[in-house]
Picture (cartoon, rainbow, N blue to C red):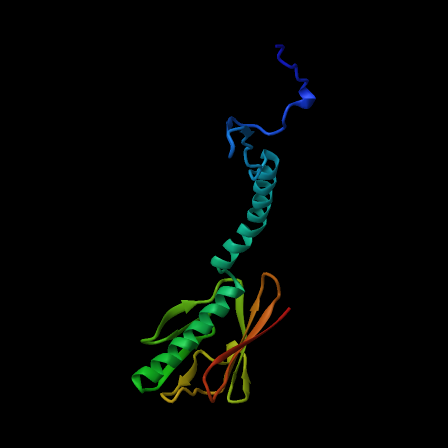
Amino acid sequence: MKTPVHSRASLPKSVGSPRRGDRGRLTQVSLPRDAFTLIEVLVVVAILGLILTIGIPAFVRALHKEGMRKAQSDVLEACQKARGNAILKSANQTLVFHPMDKSFEAPGAFPLTVLPPEVNIVGFSMSGEEYVPEDADVVTVNFYPRGTSDEFAITLRSAADGSQCTISLDEVTALADISTSR
């Protein structure tokens, strides 16, 4: 008996080793096709690379505060610490600004901090009256044990980009609010 010759076109397309089926006949086992191709993996790696290239600088800027963002953050933190200290200790707490030195502190609650060199104090508002930095050597804001404060606002301007922000305190809650402009 002659063995039949099969052409390539007539061979089964599944790959694998033969095994015995239900009734003893040989069946082909096929390999799964659920794997990723090299091109698919390279496309995903390229997309991740682009996302990281775009995202990392923004992330680093968010972590590294400088200029106006640092000044805003420092003034807000000083207000929060002064308010918190007044409430916790049931005693008045002062926040002291030294306009000519561009510094401020809340003794016992927030250390002496100097504004970044490119940020300047443009003006103050205390109880409805406007002041320019040259008018006062010291500006004092009082925070009270019931969570209130003096009416106060400070305006800062960045020499680097001309942006300006005003940080004001709500006298009833002593919470700070920021409004910015360019």
